[in-house]
Amino acid sequence: MEMTGLFFYLVSVLIAGGIYAVLCLALNVQWGMGGLFNAGIAGFFAVGAYASAIATTAMSSKHLGGFDLPIPFGLAAAMIVAGITGWVVAKICVRLKSDYLAMASVGIAEILRLVIVNESWLTNGSLGIAGVPRPFGNLVQGREADLLYLAVVWFCVLGVYILCQRLYVSPWGRTLRAIRDNEDSARAAGKDVDWFRLQTFVIGCAIMGLAGGLSAHYFKFLSPSATEPLLVTFLVWVMLMAGGSGNNRGAIVGALAIWFIWSATEIFTSRLPPEWVTRSSYIRMLLVGLLLQFVLQKFRSGLVPEKSPKIRSD
Amino acid sequence: MIDFINLYLVPGLTIGSVYALGAVGISMIFGILRFAHFAHGDLMTLGGYGVLTAVWFIPIHPLLLLPFGIALAIVAALAVDQFFYKPLRKLPTIYTVIASFGVALIFRSLAQLFWSSGNQVFIPGVRMPVVLFDTFRISELHMQVIILTLIIAIALHFFLTRSKLGRAMRAVSDEPELAAVAGLDTERVIRWTWVIGASMAATAGVFAGMDTSMHPNLGWNLLLAMFAAAVLGGIGKPMGAIVGGLIIGVAEETATFTWFSDEAFISPSYKSAVAFFIMVALLLFRPQGLFKGRLL
Image (cartoon, rainbow over all chains, first blue to last red; front, top):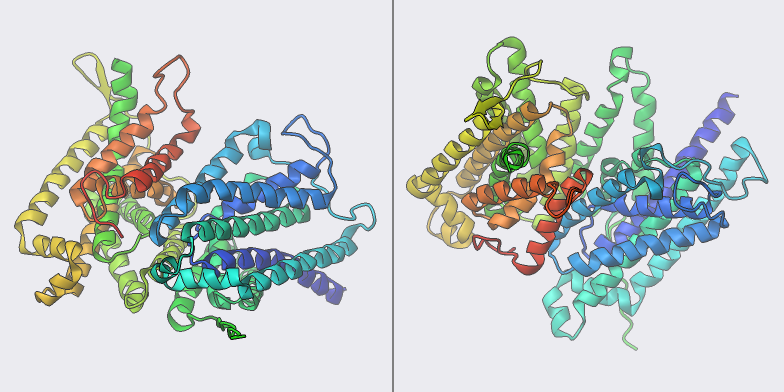
């Protein structure tokens, strides 16, 4: 009993870890490859979650639609809607330099949150959307369903990884890294810097939307609190820095490593004396903040540092 | 019209004063250390809690206990600069921006640990507004906030233009290399930037906490508007930040006024989006701000 409990705990950790791995790969496209500082990760994650939930739930009078579409359509919708949101944002903000883009993207996350809370015709406001289906939901029930969902999530991680890896080694990715490392020389070589940045931002946002969709189908219920901007955005940044930004494998390794540490602190804090248990989530938040400082100072290139591929001369 | 002044303009100037004081620090840090300090809002929160704690022990008017909040904020700011920002100073500043995100998280979790996550008030009970000339009904606090902000702004102006240290700060902000070559002690200027920025942040935090209530997210919720104010005033221009803060505050409040019809121009729930749109419009069309700040 103890062993199966532990096993399924591990399964749930790995499902969430997989969703974070997708987010981390997405941020790696934007920051690791493109040098774009997106501090609004939670916003695009939320857009994807709501898009997929609205597309796949049964008809409802409480929020927009309930189009009852199959889940792959829901995930595709998540990517498209998050991608379009990213396009609008990039159209306005991508010309801005690092710090300014960070400010603007924090604002975007905030506005997306305001829309989700206030536009109840669209999202049912703070009451949230219930009855989001799981893939193969009528095939298996209970804990076995978690196992199946684990496979679905990691299938998506694999797909995104292959996509990102192809992007990284392609001429497109090479141009992107050239822009990241020296914008002026890339511009002088005739590269349309803004256009490359726009594409990068949109691709990253679409993948963040996919992660949002995956989490909506996992929890089966969606409320604005599920997209707590701080936690999602911060954790993903810590994960990418720790894993090694610029490296797709590093992104996955970082996501898993930090997520394991985060989950382990839960086990640890649940054993604290009762008067401290209520405060455990703040202790964990403090630890993430300190961990980020440690990574930035002692560990900047991460667990799996970036290694640019050799350029063939033929 | 009277309603407009009582319910929109004065509250706008009040929240604008809070933004103004916060934006001074953001603008100076951006100008001198060259990075967007994302933990500034949470520095404000710490200052607010410092005064709140002092009120528990010394039951006098919270504004008289401001030094306690200021001291806490200064200690916190100097400590994080020493331990978390200074080791990154040689790197591209974006790493310091990432570090400041982490510092924001650290400040907030400390606030939640020590002061719990609920709402707390400085002075319990409802206070009646003061009636002036039988028409203006202005709360005592709002008057205090606006007047104190003006006094601080004037003092800051004289400090920056007349004192040796203030002039050194402006020199580092305008031309860091030249200032270093001229023999100015950059680290000393940086320390004083933190001291001034943190003092004003703490003051703003107390104002904001007294106007509504203290809670751990207080400062973070104000951060965007303060960035907008700093950009509006021009990065590295403290006086610009004051004007920018007041403009953003008034714009936010009056945007919900019934300008063109009986409906509010902007639904009050979208108030915080006003600052964002002003900021983006500025970054696109006039990134140097109203007062010709620097471009980074």
